[in-house]
Image (cartoon, rainbow, N blue to C red):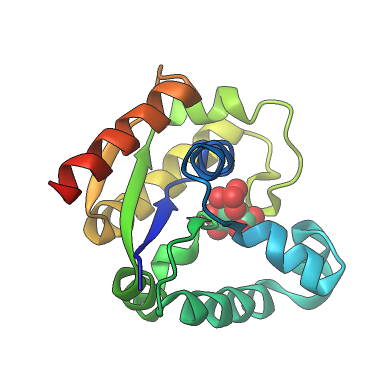
Length: 172
Ligand code: S3P
C-alpha cells in the first residue's frame, strides 16, 4: 500500500492549503481531519468543543487516525493537536510519511488575525497564547516528523515544491 503524506503543525501553519495543492498536483485523495469531523458530526469544530467538549473531539480524531494506519496514498492535513496523542502518532507513522510545517508565532498570529474558528485561540492576547501553546507542542511536532519544512515567509507553492522534492528524493 502506498504511504500517506501526512501534514502536521500548529494551527494556521498552512496544512489545509498545502494539502489541497499537493492532492491536486499528485492526483491523490485528500482528507482534512477537521473538515471530515465537521461533516461527520454536522457541527463546526467550535460547536463540537462548546456542545460536546474537547475530549469528545479528541476521541473522533483518534478514531480517524487509526484508519490512516493502513496507508493508501492519501494526503492528510491533521488538526494541530493530533500529535499530542502517542497512539495517533504511531498510527500516522505506520501508514505515512510525516511532514512538519514549521512556522513562527508571529507568522501564525498574522495568518490567523481574522480567524475565529479555533476555539483554543479565542483569548484576548492571541500572540501570547500562540507562543505558549507552540512552546508546549514543539516537542510533539519535531519528535514525530520525518521531515521538517520551514514555512515562515514561504508561499504555499514553495512549501508544496519542497515537499515534492523530498518525496522524489525518497523514491531514488
Ligand atoms: C486544534 C487545531 C485545529 C482543530 C481544533 C484544535 C489544536 O485544527 O483541530 O481547533 O488543538 O491545535 P487546525 O490545526 O487545522 O487549525
